[in-house]
Every structure is written in C-alpha cells, then in structure tokens.
Length: 88
Image (cartoon, rainbow, N blue to C red; front, side):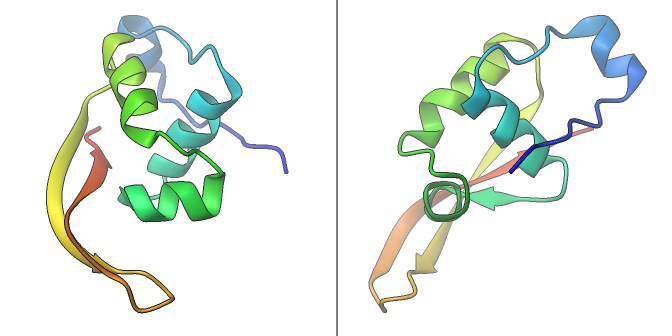
C-alpha cells in the first residue's frame, strides 16, 4: 500500500523529508489524526513507534505525545499508552 504525504509547503521550508519507509508511513498517518502506539503497531507494522516519532521530531516535525489508557482488541488493558498528534 502506497502512502501519500501531504506536507504543507510552509512545513517543507523548515523540515527535512522523512528518510525511511516507516517514517513516511507514520507521518502520512499522523496527517489524518492522532495515532496510538498500539494502532501504529497494528495498522502500520511499526514495532517501535516511539523511535520513529523521535526521528521525525529530530527532522523538525512538531509531534506531541499525550498519555492515555487503551484496550487492545483482545481485551488487554494498558495504562500510559502514547498517543501521538502532529501539530500543524
């Protein structure tokens, strides 16, 4: 499945482009709305989303982390799950 990045021109002036396929998928998905660690693993196949988020932050992307409680599809409950939001 191809990911299409829709980066506003003003962001491109101040930020580098993502350099890995996982960064590209993650950034494209964050443009559609918030994404939890659980969802990043399930939807995008990114097993270490926090590392990819930190890489995108180092490229200049304003990604905020909020901690939430979440329940997986199998009923397992997690506290302090990261929810990532791209602040445009």
